Length: 71
Image (cartoon, rainbow, N blue to C red; front, side):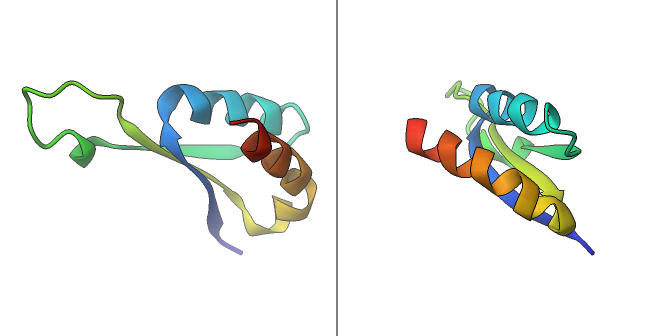
């Protein structure tokens, strides 16, 4: 089984979701997209993607949906 992306957005939101998912025993992987800030003069939050194993999706899905409804 492979990884599936469950979130894409700011680093702060990704870390918040990561903590909620890891609290139920599901391992997560965060990937920071360094290409998001192509123009050095513009300082923005880095784009972050959060992944979990496909087999853990059923367990994590209720938390993911609740999180999406709140943001």
